[in-house]
Image (cartoon, rainbow over all chains, first blue to last red; front, side, top):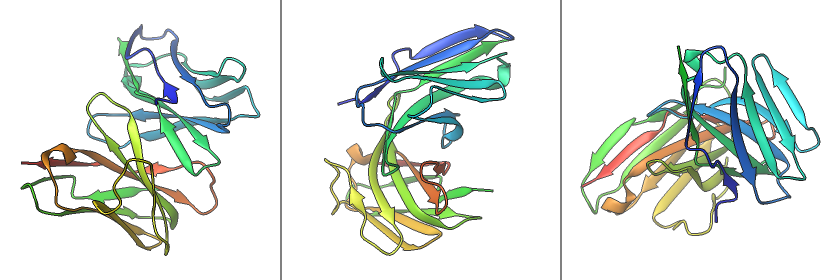
Length: 111
Length: 116
């Protein structure tokens, strides 16, 4: 049972434009959400997170939006850069003891 | 800071043998370590959570007698795949969490296991 879903396996964006990666979840008890960036044959690298009590968190070019009523979160990258090309995973946590990951979205930023 | 290493990075073993994978937090003490498994084009699946000095907590469907986890110190956790079979071939990734942080976890580079 996939509790966290990323329905877009891939996304291509022109350099300088905005990248929007989406994530949906089913469990309303999740209290923390994280985005990770991953290169092939490497472990994920933490990117940005948001608590369930907030609806937006911003860190430089990266902003995460949380819509609890829709059980949806999104990661915005603006402006997108070629170095942002990677697989992005969203993850949801239950009290920090269990983590559920989506299947990932492969982002390609075209120079 | 917050560097996590894994050893080996890749391993090939014969069916029926056991393989040990080490996960080390290099510059911090990890009270909790997580072990994940990733199949091609699929998400990371949490296998187990281990706290230093206590038994690991396994997720539903993960055989604890097959995937032995030891968290003997605040900087080292090991995963031993016992009597490995070809279906155990996968990418195994560990992560570690610092005492002061409730949610952030720092991932190792992963270990590619191939069982022939």
